[in-house]
Image (cartoon, rainbow over all chains, first blue to last red; front, side, top):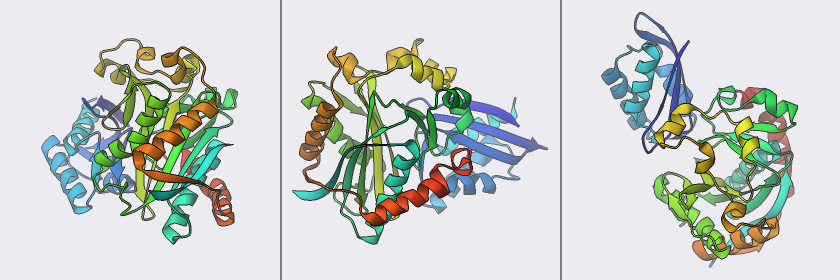
Length: 92
Length: 255
């Protein structure tokens, strides 16, 4: 697993542990001191991202769509922030 | 004024405190208890981490074990917090969905509920401000951190009041990461937190802080605090939740 972290300006810490192969996510764990409502969605999101291409704008879209579809509220970070940290972890 | 059950300052273990919060939510969902405010302390002293945090990433677990400091994962997001028995009062407010104080917009609801603390601090002679997302600052330093979850058809917001601060201990326990410091452009993390004692220049008894918080919540939230206790069922549920969830590695080391 590779790791990356980012403090969102005016927001919270996002950390990613990433296992990748062929520029796709095999497994991702997203931790940090942000808020996500409902909280259980974090595991669903991580599962949904398995097999996803590690591409900043595609990841941002997928995560945004996930949040929208689930009526979720992410506070202290945005979908783009999560995507950014995943990409950073990949570049390590 | 709306009535609110008030469970006065009690001391429990970390696992018990988290279990009691959830137990009250479940009771409120059943409609068997009223909206509730509780104040509590943590004994032994403990660390709680946010629900999305990695325990070992945030906490020196070996150090905690060696000092017999409890560790627990909360059901709320947010960060890692050291709850010093000698220096921390924590509040939990539990409201049913749709309650006038449980605003739909989460960022606004933090501000609304945190007014209880701002008013309480004012009673102690401390000027403080709510700062989004979930902090209360005095003199630019953090005096209270707060976290919210919405589940079981209720809202739970809980947060700390830093009555006194053992900075050395806090920073032995919590793994403070360089990124967090550099964003604030502060090289010394000790400059970012404060306590009632630091601000007033004197140690204030817990009971006095309790009285100020009680008064602050009453005035700011427009509620009538009615002294009450956990029901027998709430207590039983809390015991079960300690055993099945909050004392387990499966929960606490989930991430």
